Amino acid sequence: MSRVIDHFPSWMTGGGIFVGLTDMPWDDSDLIDPEDMDIEYFGNHSGLKESSPLLEKMTSWPNDHVLTDVEIGILQRLIKQKYSHTWSCVWDALLAEYNPIENYSMVEETTPGTTKTVKVETDEKIANKSTGSIYGFNSSTAVPASHNEGESNTTGSKAKNYTEESYTGKDTHTRSGNIGVMTSQMMITQELELRKNAFLDIVYNDVDKILTRPSWR
Image 1 (cartoon, rainbow, N blue to C red):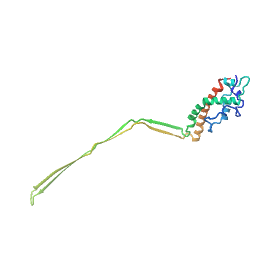
Image 2: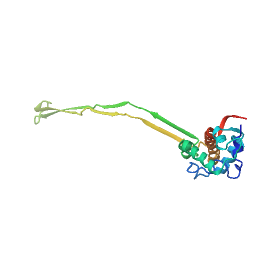
Image 3: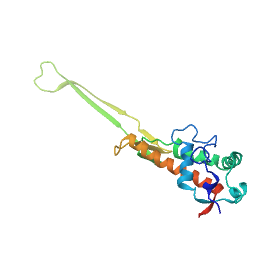
Image 4: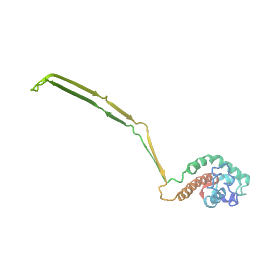
């Protein structure tokens, strides 16, 4: 059995698998360098893993072992066709849509579904009564010469008023931001590094499915 590194003798100097991959999600990013990916993949991740049957057949192992540029191009095309879409989706989920300034985020959703009724009822009644007397001229008694008595009643009423408010649907409250446990720069550096490493692990493991057997020598 051969090892992956046997087929890529120039993996440290641009003869690996990632340098020649095009239209990748990391093409316009400063986070990932394809040359560094090759160094890490072959030097640290998979270089000593047993080669896949595909690599051995392409190089006619054991008569030969070094992949030509054309053969490496074939492998790159195969990897791209099989995984580029998945990698783009993972890249978008882990890195492209990440807001590194927030270390606190909460969304609270409530459904009121309540009704509030305000009742105003006012009845107002006013009653007035007036009496007048006219006493006789030069009279020594208090016997009124004429008596004029009248009564007036005034009644007012206000209509009953009702106010009703109904709440339906959902109320959503969102809270997010930096609560101050670390600086924004620290958050950016730490979180992006974690997400980048998670992304690279996915990429390297996918490439293993093309280049390696699932075992170490």
